[in-house]
Amino acid sequence: MYGNDFAVPDEPLNAAETPDYEAALAEHAAGEMDRSAESRASFDALIAADQRIEPRDDMPQEYRDTLIRQIAQHAHSEIIGMQPEGNWITRAPSLRRKAILMAKVQDEAGHGLYLYSAAETLGMDRSEMLDRLHSGKQKYSSIFNYPTLTWADAGAIGWLVDGAAIMNQVPLCRCSYGPYGRAMIRVCKEESFHQRQGFEILWALMQGTAEQQEMAQDAVNRTWWPALMMFGPPDTGEAATQGGHTEQSMAWGIKRFSNDDLRQKFIDMTVPQAQKLGLTLPDPDLRWNAERGHWDFGPIDWDEFWQVVKGNGPLNAQRIAHRVRAHEEGAWVREAATAHAAKQAATQERAA
Ligand SMILES: [Fe+2]
Ligand SMILES: [Fe+2]
Image (cartoon, rainbow, N blue to C red; front, side, top):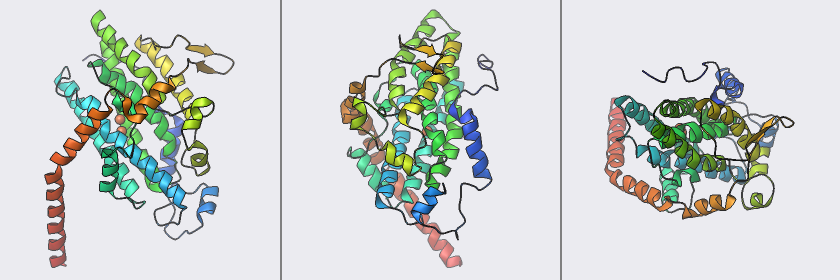
C-alpha cells in the first residue's frame, strides 16, 4: 500500500504532536488540571493562581457568557464541519479511503457532543444552542461555507483546516474553564489523526499523475487563505477593531495566545510540510525572514472574511438548510432515545 513513508515519524506534523500538547496531557494525567471538590476560592483568586474554574464555582456573568458563546460556536463548527467532507464519503476513491473518511466525519460529531455537553455545564440548554445555530444567532467557523469541489479537498481540509483547528485548540487544553479544557485534551488527539489523513491524501495524489497533482494544487490554492482566516481577525490594525474579545479572554485564561501569534505558528509549521509535499502555497510574498525567525506572508483579504461571516459565503444558506433538515428528520431518534431513557430510569427505580 502506498503512502506509508510520507513523513519522518518523529517529526511533529501538527500542534497536537508538539511539546505544548504533551505538557498539557501530562498535567492532565497528574490531576493538576483539576481541583478537588473541597477547594473553594473566589473567581479572581483562582484565575490569578491559574487554577481551573469548575461548574460549581461562582463566576462573573460576562465570563459565563463569553464561554457559552465560544463553546457553542466551537460545537456548531464541529457538526457543520461534517458536511463538506461528508459530501465525499460515497465518492472516496477506495474502500480504505471511505472507511477513514467516515471515521473522521464521525469523530467530528463526537467533538460536537463533548462541546455541547461542556456548554450545558454553564446552564445553556442544547436545544437552545441548536435553535440559535439554525436561526443564525450563533455562528460557526466560516471555513465550512466553502465548497469541496474535488476529492483533493478532503486532503486539503484534513491537512490545513484540521491543522489550523489543532493550533487553536492545543492552548485551549489549558483553558481556565475545566470542562472545556478537558474536552480539548481528547479532541486534539483525534484532530491529529485527521490532519495526518489529510496530509496522506495529498501525498498520494502528489505521487500520482499530472492531473492528480494539479487537483491537489488546486484544492490547496482554494483552501490556504480561508484556513489562515480561521484564526480570526488580526490583533491590531483596521480589521482588528471589528472583531474579537482577545484581551479579556486572555486575562481570564480562556485564550492563551493572540490570533496573530497562532496564525504565525501555523504558517511556520505548514510551509516545510508544503515543501515536502511538493505543493506551492498560493502566496507570492511567502519568504523566510531570518531576522524574525518566522515566515513572512502576504496580506489577508479581510473583506472576504467578513462577507462570509455575515452570511454571504458561497454555501452559508445551503449548510444551514441541510443542518435544519437533518435536525427535523432526526426528531424521531431524539424522541425514541428520550423514551428509552425514561423507561430505563423507571425500571431502575422499581428495582431499587
Ligand atoms: Fe473536530
Ligand atoms: Fe477534525
